[in-house]
Image (cartoon, rainbow, N blue to C red; front, side, top):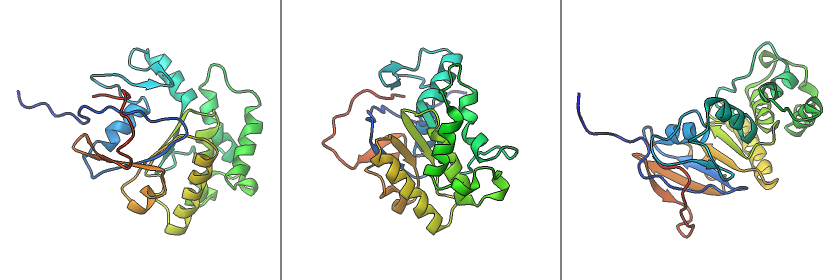
Amino acid sequence: MGGETVYALNNFSFDFREGEFWAIMGSSGSGKSTLLNILSCIDRPTQGSYEIRGREVSDLSDNEISALRGRELGFIFQSYNLIPQLDVIDNILVPVIYQDDPIPNARERAVELAERVGLKGRMHHRPNQLSGGQQQRVAIARSLINDPAMILADEATGNLDSQTAQEILDLFDELHASGKTILLVTHEQEVGDRAEHIMRLKDGDILSVDSDSRPKTSGIAN
């Protein structure tokens, strides 16, 4: 049947720069999930282009996109997405398994990351032996194992109590201070306020950006 075409993202064009910490906010249906899926290379834009560190993503094969996703992007999910049969260290190492050219000394790096996120005494515990906050710390360490260009966090504090959520946001602050690029999708204002910049979406458009003086350059269009 015919009808009006509805775009999840409409004339979207933006450049997220290395080292920035962004909160992406908006009501249900605003385009947050579509934006996150495109940024994470799960979906491809039906029009326009998407570049990561100057590399055009739209023309890559599925295998090339998979490799790029594993190498350049780190993911943190609301539901943690840990593998129940694996301990903390092996869960952190999961992204390394899918790399054709894995990083050297990966296990040593996993141990260092576990310590960095406060899991020194929990390295050989499995997910069911960890609290929600500890599981999210594992997910954060996992997102860092391949030293990605960008960390994408989807409602990363949504399943946590307020105190644990603050501890996780403190970790994001530390990662940002160390130079990591972070995009945090959230519907909670107090979470968004922890970011360096806030982008608000509405009906697939950019409703507002916290710094209107920033130049807009081609990033993702749909």
